[in-house]
Length: 184
Image (cartoon, rainbow, N blue to C red; front, side, top):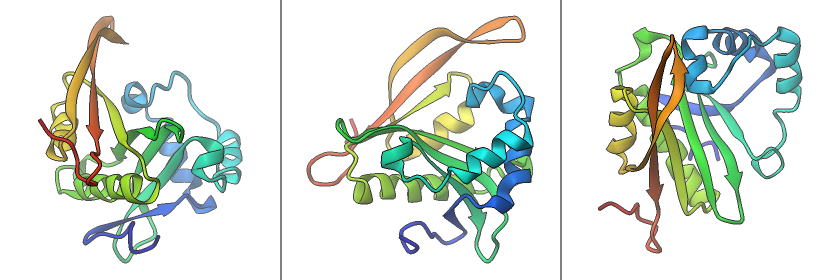
């Protein structure tokens, strides 16, 4: 699995106990709560418990959360998730976050997403992956559509933020029987 989850600039790894402060900072950053559907802060105690159970495989937990790290470093710069894993219907949701704005726009998220898509289709044998993206989040829309994700729906007034409602789009990537991504 090491080769599968290693790219040119980044690699994906399992979460470690040393990631406690990194996860604590992300989970308590109100500016990203909308993306993670978080409503309240998390304590270090709860995050420590989460990390203690992070050894469960995706078939047990129905989720796989990986740290995104720069090559030659063990320090995480972001997270990438498969969630709502459904082995019967062979699908999962995908989420990604690069923590610092200075690290965004450099292709690191793109490389991490490519590694995760390959892992999902080739190792987990998924048929499809999907992403829920705020309709105004042009950076994420550009990232996911680069890999052939298609917008398949729009959830009107789905997100309530700062006294206003915002739409959320559903994007989907389906793999065909030739192990290629279906594009229209």
